[in-house]
Amino acid sequence: MLKRIEDLIGTDCPDLPALLDGLPMGIVMLDDDGRVLMLNKALENLTGYRREEVRGLPCRHVLRSRACVQGCPHGSGEGPGAGIETDCINRHRRKIPVRITPVRVCDGNNRPVCVLDVVEDLTALRETEARLSQATGQGQIIGRSQAMEKLLRVVPVIAQHDAPVLITGATGTGKDLLAEAVHKASPRSREPFVRFSCGPMPEELLDAELFGRVLDGSGEFKAGRFQQAQGGTLYLSEIADLPLAHQGRLVRFLDEGTVLPVGAIKPVRVNARLMASTAESPEKLVQDGRLREDLFHRISATRLHLPRLKDRGEDLDFLLHHFLGHYAARFKKNITGISPKALLRLNEHEFPGNVRELKNIMEFAAMVCTGDKIRTEHLPGHLTGQFDAGPAQRSAEKVRKPARKHTEER
Amino acid sequence: MERRVLITVARDEIAPRFDLTTEALFLNISESGEIVSRKSFLLAQPSGDDLCDLALSRDIGTIVCGGIEDEYYHYLRWKRIDVIDSVMGPLEAVVTRLTAGRLKAGDILYDRAGENA
Image (cartoon, rainbow over all chains, first blue to last red; front, side):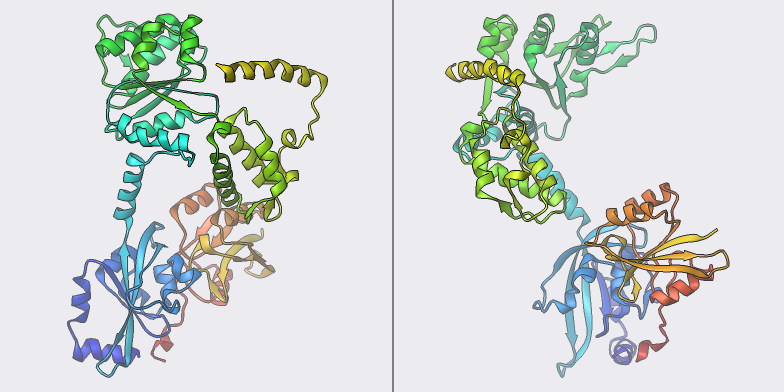
């Protein structure tokens, strides 16, 4: 075959190499045994090999694509023009996403002359896809229940405006993820999303962390979370943990768009969208004096509430299988499902930790599972009654139960 | 001192890709270039991570492979493992050149004289 190719290049079609070199995509010409006859310039650049170096070598060593190793495209029996998306590793150790389309070339008598592999570099396409999915996706928030679908439908609408957002929901329901989803769907998605947990912290440190500080002596400015979120979104989780004085400064920011860094004389203008969350009822927090009423009325302009997992109906089953698939893949296990008994146990469970608890349970189950199904023995002890509650734990549960009832009645 | 070498293998040649390798050959080579021990190892599935772990757990000093991603290459170098990569050729030809102390990265050991066959 090589002889015929040489004839083709030498006499019948002497311009063939120049023609192939002029094409923008990579082309490799192969013989029937999959040995390289010629690379064009584009493929030389992509693989890092010159045509003289690799002439006569098996193409799997030159292209080094996943498809070459795991199922050669030439043996797949696909029709002409069927491309395979895969990746290859070039001489410079760079992994490149590519599409390989094999084309069989025949002469006038329909005799095979050679095979051309058309190799397209998909790097730019993959980067664009990744950027778009990051910028416009709903983040990691998923759900099929009516309550979640309703919530996810309003996210893109809310995201288009700059009004502050207050997210409420019990612990583990996904408040942080929802805030991130709103940011990603907003025109500010390419700017920073800065998360700040308003947990207990010395007031002076909290001041500097949030609003920035002008260093004594040098006059150098150290940016706080507000400045870091410039152009983007600042998300304050558990806002009621913020001291009342600081809450007052948030009111000023919402009214005037300025903050006063520690040690500065003049306020600084900040362009950031404010989002906040709390696991408790904000009305109750206002009543208890833990959340300033003026701040509450400003940040609750747009309010989103995440339901508890138990109130999300079919989401329990959906999320359970979602996490199971995720962790089975992560631990490289061939887990295909969950036994009816184990499913019953999970359905009976209250999930006080909501989605976070379910996620942890499925991580544990996938970790300890040795077969193809999650069974009751793979569930954590507190679900199967293995950790029999001692007297101290039982009394703690007694105290907790009325509290939960109280929350439900509210 | 003996040299411990891991070679990534696919059938009877060097595996084209490190991260898709399912077979490895361990060699203990004496200072004079003699093979003291030779052992094959099959991996449950192709995994670059598992191969790195295997090399570290076996105290490997040199890895011979085909194409390898930057990330694995630098990790192995950081762990003070010599990586002779981009090697192409039949396994035995590679072993012969390795024991002679002449194998280097990018070597192509296929016999291309018979390409017209």
